[in-house]
Image (cartoon, rainbow, N blue to C red; front, side, top):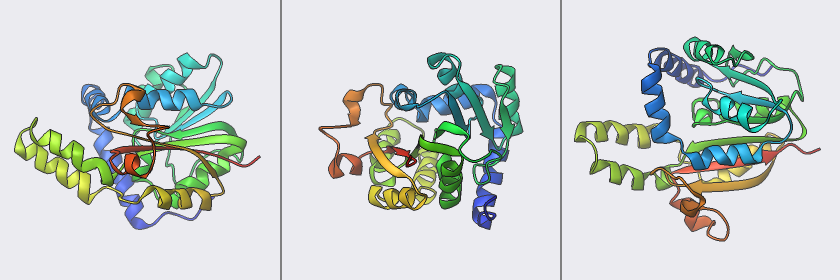
Length: 242
């Protein structure tokens, strides 16, 4: 079991637990619609490897339900810090979902073929600890995927919301986007992923406007330093060496 994450990470998790415990299903659906897109969901679904799938920070089970439909017979597991979200998963017949932290996964080594942390979950974890834990529970040759908001391109989204929202809401979004956002560049994230013993095999940038097709993503041949620099969401896929 890894060392406990720093106090700041524990405080962040506590804040998120309270936030989701107090969030109605309708509000959660709106939040996810604003920040998640069909395009990014498809990235996860297309990249799955093997039947044993874990989602870290699974929320109320939206992604797990999509995996269940896409991969018949999949052995699904989920984990979330909010007991309210775990209960909603159980109500959707997602029985193998438990309460816990991505910083200390309650699973054995090499248990899963694919591990994902969708909807910005990695942002609320102690990254080095969480990546090491995800690598630990992934089998050799398995895949790990996550996405996160990127400061470099977020100013574009913030600017468009300025014209569409009440200024008070916009100001709150600005604080959330810039003061609480991890602004590391892609090369730095690559190094962190590799430090966990993983090999980066794909990086995709997109814009949160929302993206609904590959036409608006920074994939080959359009992907590159410039494309990733204007991305507001970046998706990483890594593999554990066999």
